[in-house]
Image (tube, rainbow, N blue to C red; front, side, top):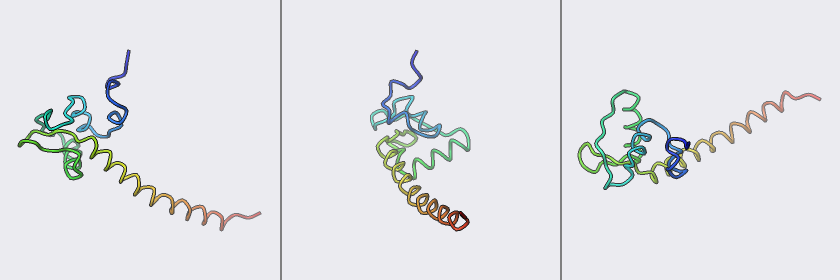
Length: 104
């Protein structure tokens, strides 16, 4: 038996948040497939607002939305780049400080 969602492309399976999962499960990935949606919890509201801010969730008609998978992955890639730009210098600084305490 296959996993739920295994019929989706690999890129579509790598999404975060309950709102993205909701739209993917209903195949609302284009303007023609837009569906009505209203967040039920504060957690869903947070993800909903985040996706709208970043352009991953597009409104076609008032209250009807679709999930823009390409915009989502662009945003995720930008986030990864920022994380690497912070993590790499931080890890080098930590390694440098550790070397100061290294004794033979």
